[in-house]
Image (cartoon, rainbow, N blue to C red; front, side):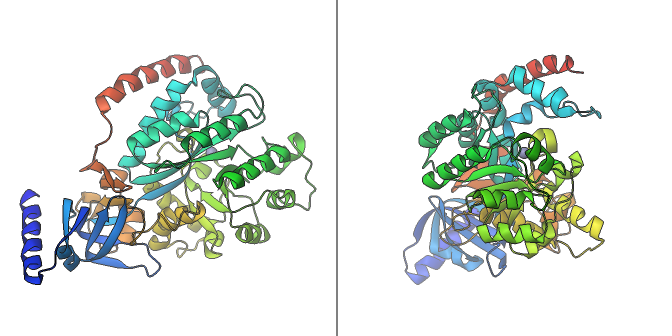
Length: 468
Ligand SMILES: [Zn+2]
């Protein structure tokens, strides 16, 4: 590796001496990469170069462009794939502390495991430490942006920023008392404070997360929307997640007449907005899709969590083909266990193809598009992230194509969507900073982290025994 780097620098200086043009100083250059830009023209560079200055991509092109630059750091990708960092649109990352509990066919897992665990164990410390653990996993798997909704999102923010990935972090608002808000809807005041503290952070976008249609009244949904618009921040909500959701809304919140869908109920209330990122969105028809498109609502498609819970199959293919802003998410680690997006791409194809018996649903390119630009569009951040283009933020991952499972690499999109594992990610770069290098995190001292994480898991294990 070292000799190759010196060779590159030598070539750079020889060609520059010939041209007599001064070299442009930059921070980072990735060379010899098979680059999937995910730009509008679907441009792929077979032996390409990405040039980064500070936190921006300032040039991208064939190998010959490298001769114009003098970089502080060069990463020779040696033929591996470089692509935009992936976006996980729906998660509850602190729940990684409870991953793997209550998995053995427990009935009513929500009431027997989720709620007692949260009630007994949630604290600022647990949320911060577990979020660090989860953010490390995300970074190592090539996720450079996560949308999260939970409690004490200021603690989540600290850890996400410490690991160095991006986060759209929504503080939960709901009608029950919760860990960080003893009053019903106390999350709203908490969110206001959180937003004020974290707004304008380079990695963190604070957001508000009215939990779901059946746990938040129209009054509080609309208050949340007004806040999102005033602060120009995203709003994260679970919508049309289960077959019984309309009944739940009618019983607990507001009667909905039979002729109205959940999406129409939200539209008539005046809640829909381009600030909204809706998670799941399984139970809807074509008219509902047109409404979501009209209002520019972003959608997180979470096929792995939905099939694991047996809730239903989202009409994701129709939404994608209608050009809705749809990307991919995992949902929390108690619902989906793995947090990488490689897995989700593969699931998205399987759940679209199986009931329709149509193999053409979701080509590998379309899956990678949902994992990158789709997520960026859903968050209204497509001008900043989601593709590798000049002027965009330098959120880049490198995926090893010499591993046993990524050979042969005839079609790089198929390699990424169907063959690659998260462990094939060798480098993760966010905002121009290399946070994973040769498969190792550069930002966190894992030994130090484990001094907090291991005792935490022991405490969780002790309490979980009482729930069985
Ligand atoms: Zn969720």
